[in-house]
Length: 317
Ligand code: NAD
Image 1 (cartoon, helix red, strand yellow):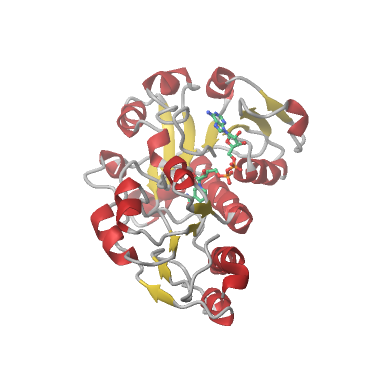
Image 2: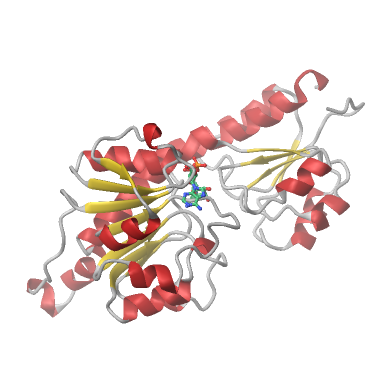
């Protein structure tokens, strides 16, 4: 770490940092670290990001792109503290080469995302969206039959923090849980009624699949046309991980053709989604990337992201 004569300055880009309470700001204030609140509304506009980060020593970011363009124009940058997890918008390799420390808040929000994935799983099984709409129409007394989650077969792709927490919740429903995670040793499965299987087995046997993968070269478009074709007829899928993990056009076609019964998505290849046809389908529940948006999680993430900055600068302050 560089010793410097002035106090490090933090640019807060994350739009949701400190929304629930002042506690995350207090962490910086108590350590005497000055900050600028930017709440960046253009997370993909690197020109704008470089401008607002400027000569800051640290950033607290959300999905803001941090790449070569930004690094080249922000020479003081020493630490990127992600408010959340999923570091796919940050060029981590280049950051390492430039000596920029990258960190995130993995323990702060995984239970919250798991709660939300369960909300979507249950909402799809019971066709909540259509039934809410139908209540206000003359056909309110002709609802279609829906499906139990109780003893359903649920596929989980990615059995990390969130995937495991979803599996823990599914145990209460006596679900049969199929996991696809090629980096996981079977001995690390900690939930009952859970089997580590191939991706094809997850696809072909699950009544509903929930995705909990990081966005990497190996997961990009992992849910493509071919994968949807292998899914069980009439199954459903939930994506709370990253939009680019799925081919949304292929998902649209699978839903339109009746191959899949329904889908719920919290994330999109482009955010906010522009002209996304998926949003027009009646059997789709679409939410605006809000899986972590609770008061409790917001405080935990904010405090953890601020502490990461304080710990990094440590005795220099
Ligand atoms: P994690 O790192 O704890 O777990 C990811 C798991 O995926 C690991 O077990 C890993 O082995 C597995 N995996 C990696 N590549 C795989 C592949 N090709 N096929 C199958 N499994 C693979 O991460 P986490 O905390 O559980 O979070 C998962 C992702 O959820 C994050 O990377 C982020 O993109 C997303 N997320 C979204 C929100 C939201 O607001 N919607 C919030 C938090 C996290």
